[in-house]
Structures are given as C-alpha cells and as structure tokens.
Length: 121
Image 1: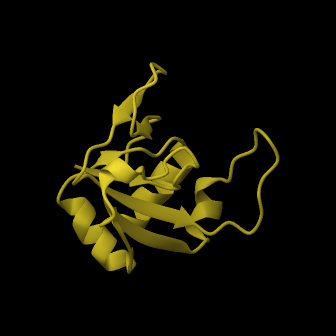
Image 2 (image 1 turned 180 degrees about the vertical axis):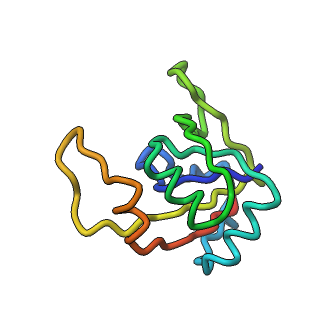
Image 3 (image 1 turned 90 degrees about the vertical axis):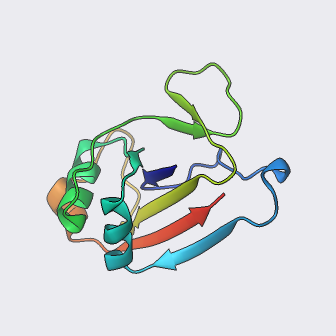
C-alpha cells in the first residue's frame, strides 16, 4: 500500500523486524505525481497542505488524520504498516516553524519548495 504523508513523525522509526532493506529515494515531482495517479491513501492532516499538494500534483488529496504505526497502541485513527508498504513523503520546506496553533495557508504552501521522498518498507 502507498501512503502519502507530508512528514515522517518521530514515532515512525523503522524497527528491526521490518528488515534492513528499507530504502529512501528522493523523487522529482513529476515521478511523485505519476505514482499518485496509480492510487494511494492520504495521511495528510491539514486542509491547506492537502489542497496545495492537490494543486501541485493535479491529484485529489483528501484530509485524513491517520497515524501510521508499526504497533497498534489503541489510540484513535491508527493504521498498521506492514513490510512492503510504501510512504511517499511530500516534505514542504517551510521558512520557519510556526507558533503553536498557527498553520500556513494553501497559497503560502504553494510558494514553498517540496522535497519528495519515496520510502520502501
């Protein structure tokens, strides 16, 4: 399964039991766009980010506040990852960290560079 994320949280450290053959590859935006056309599950949690990535890739990105995990803890919205799953990370290069509770607007995000990374678990 392919999951689209805009960041990899600290809790998503690849455990040893997932194997040592995990790979991370930087992709150009056109390759990421093509991959999204083949199907994915969004793990983008904010509307401004989802809308900006939708516009950049010409794909419909839905807001979907899920937590991708390697072990279920009983918290809401957890999705268990398995060997063979893939992450497509749209890492927006923000100029600064915003104060608590503030979000960048869709237009601000569109003006920022995005680094695309493909992670094969």
